Length: 229
Image (cartoon, rainbow, N blue to C red; front, top):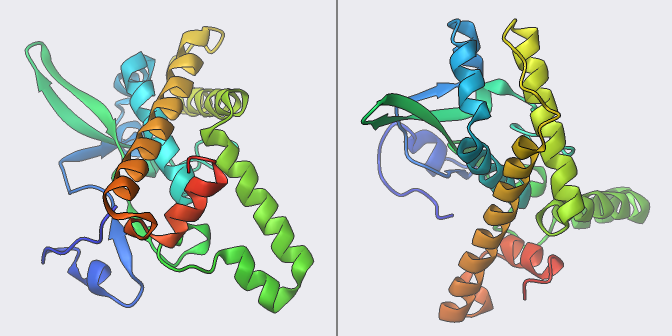
C-alpha cells in the first residue's frame, strides 16, 4: 500500500492535504448496484454463485478489515454499499465475465484507517474524552481484527455477507441464492483467510528486508495486535 505518485485524474486527491490513497488502478468496471440498476441482476446472481468470485470477495474483505474500511462491509460483514462492490471485466474463450476487484479510495486520516501516524484513534480519544471512551474504541477495534485470525468469526462475517447479498437479490426481484448451501459461505470465509495470510506474508517480507520501520506504524500495530510479529 504505497501512495500513488503518478499525475492524472486522481492528482487532487492523492496530492491533497487530506492524504487520499488508492489501492488499485482505474479499470473498466461495473458495480453491484449498477448491475441492478441496468436490469442485470440475474448476471450478478451468477457472478455471486461462482465460488472463485466469492473467494476473491473474501480477500477484498480481509484488506478492508485490516485497513479499517467500512464502506463496503460493516463490522459484522453485512454489505454496507452495493455501489462499492466493484467488478472488472474478464475476457475468455467462452465470452466475457466479471470478477470482484478491490478498487477504492482510502482516506489515510479517517477514523481507524490511519496507517501513517503513530497515534491511533482511541489514543487521541483518551486524551480528549477520557479513558473509558478510548478503551471502548480500542476494544471494538480489537474485536474487528479478530475477523482476520479467528475461523469462527471469519465464518460469521462470511455468513452475514452471503445473507445480505441474497437479501439484495430478493429486493431487486432476482432469484435468491440458496444460502443453505454452505459452499458459498465456505468460499467467502476461505477468501478472508487467504487474504489475511497474504497480508501477513507481505508485511513479514517488508520487515525482513527493512526492519520494523519498513512498514507504517499503523500497519505494524495491527500486525503486532494479530501476533504476526
